[in-house]
Image 1: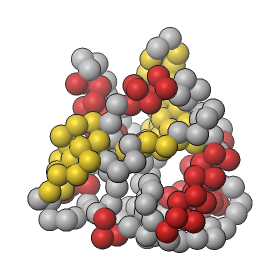
Image 2: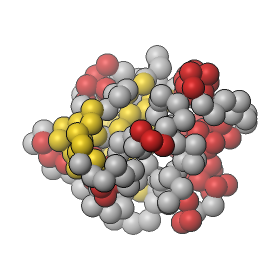
Image 3: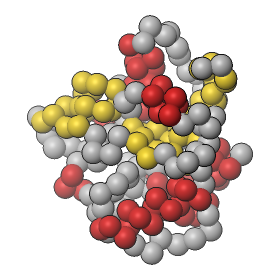
Length: 196
C-alpha cells in the first residue's frame, strides 16, 4: 500500500458554473498526461469533446493537458476529486482499493468559485465513490446528508453560503462502468447536466 496526495487538487476556470467530482486519479502507471482523467481508456474526455462537437487532437503529454483545459474553459466546467490524501492498495486504480485520509475541501472550492451552481458526481455505487465520500466529507463538517434513492441521474440540492447548489449523480465514465450504459447515452446525460 502507498499514500498519495492529489497531484492537481482542482481546476476551476473563471466563471465555472458546474463542478465535476470524481474519487481520485488512476494509478500513475495508467497516466497518458499529467491532468484529470489521464487514463486514455476512461471516456470522460471523449464525452466532453463530443459535447463541444469536436475531436481530441492529443492523447499524451503537455499538449493533451492544455487541450483539455481549453475544453473545460469552453464549458465553464471545473473538475476535482473527493480524495485529497489517500492510501492506495496493490497499486490498483479500482475505487474499492482506495482509503481516504483527507477529503478535498469542496467548500473551499465553492468559496473561491462563487459562480458554481451545480456539483456532478461521477460515481455512487460500492463502498467507495465520489458521492459517498462527499457525504462523509459533509459529516466531517457536522452536516448530515443522504442522497435520495433511485436510478441515475439522481438529483438533489443543498443550501450553502446563501444559495442552493444542485447535486447530481451520473454514471461513471470509467471503462469498468461503461457496460451499464451506452456511450451515446452517457454523452446525452452529461451534456444535459453541463449545458442545462
